[in-house]
Length: 71
Image (cartoon, rainbow, N blue to C red; front, side, top):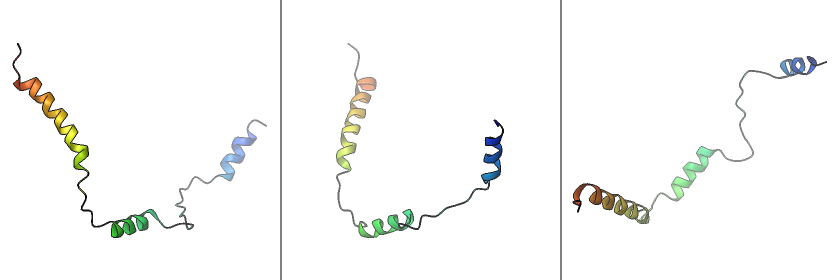
């Protein structure tokens, strides 16, 4: 009895990989292309607000570590 379940599993399950496509909604590639077409013109520079604080922290650390003399 304890060998019946593994035997049924091996007989009933296929070990061949199969690609199953989702036909209920558009593919990810289609959505990416559509999103790129709609949002292709981006004149926003808000990304600078993310990088300026990081650069300030790095530069202040570098100034303190390499250029400021120990007293």
